[in-house]
Amino acid sequence: MQRIEFRKVIDLSHIISPDIPLWPGDPPVTFDEVASPEKDGYYLRRFAMGEHSATHMNAPNSFHPNAIGIDAYEPASLVRPAVVIDLRIQARDNPDYVIGIQDIEKWEQAHGRIDQGSVVLFYTGWQTLWDDPRRFINADDKGPHFPGIGAATTTFLLEQRRIAGVGIDTHGADPGQDTVYATNSQILANEGIVLECLTNLDQLPAKGTTLVIGVLRLKKGSGSPVSVMAFVP
Image 1 (spheres, one colour):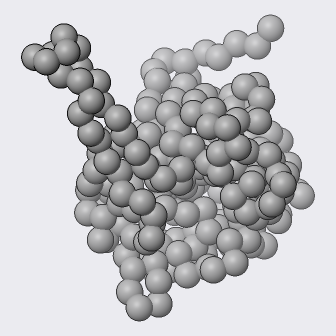
Image 2 (image 1 turned 180 degrees about the vertical axis):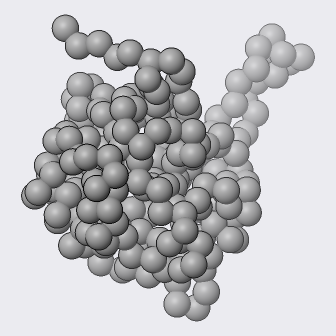
């Protein structure tokens, strides 16, 4: 038997509305009323959105043809210990900050080695920009600008720390200026976890949290909006 001990539960997912920040070119979020209490005796809406919008998890087939979709993740694989690395100062000074191995090593000097099987969450402070889509995507003629995880850092975390995945409060685990998507590609090649557009990371301790990730089991989905619950000891 395994046990999760906690004092509180923190929701790490943004509320979904038509006004949320969207990756350039992604479909809009729409809500359409299908039934009303006045006409039908009950209330019902239809909604539509991209698989990689709002707080979401990417699936391997989004980067690797013939890989599994979001519906193939085993439930037990979505319950994971998590650590939080605070990089607000670096991101504040440089929106294109590439998270390096030195950031991992500095965190470990203070908190100890990252446990195998953990999800490493990166708190950049970007979550505070969510209500301003223009600033959250921060795009110009060169594309989006926001911090993300460097390719070598991801390789280090996978090979040297055997992590289960990563999460971040920006719209991409990869830096906004990265068009190769090396972090997504590496982690999803291992059928790992990539969480993007997280929030409330400021309410988590550096270590000790357990994540429970609820996906929509979209058949062969390239990803899914998710409800991410953090159980804080």
